[in-house]
Amino acid sequence: MTRPRRIGASAVLVLLTACAGNPGPGEPGYPFNLSGDYAGEFTVDGMALPAIMTLATGVGGAVTGSFTVSAMGITGEVEGTLVGDQLTFRASYYNPETSCPGTAESAVTVGEEGGSLSGPLTVNECGQILSGSLSFRR
Image (cartoon, rainbow, N blue to C red; front, side, top):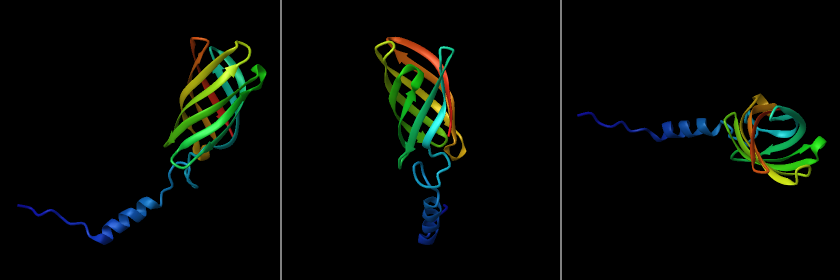
């Protein structure tokens, strides 16, 4: 019969200290935090729409921000979650050209130092579901 090994208090302390040294989403030094202004475009149903986004990552990976598609007079709010290099978000807006509210949802990849984000996009506006993509850089 083998005896279970006991982990000494010093081993537990070393393990906890090692884990405490790695910053999490929203903490200084986390390699994928989104922060600041991003320029790029949403491509929806084949149409490229230049846009600006302002994003910030809070502790725990909560991402908030806003976006503007000037050519269409659209502004909206962004809420999401950052885990590793993946941002899952939902953006809500109102389109004055169609007189409809809309949502855009995506799970995108974030570049090193939070310098870029890109990936697929699904838009729901006026009862229509449209597919597309997004690509932004700081």
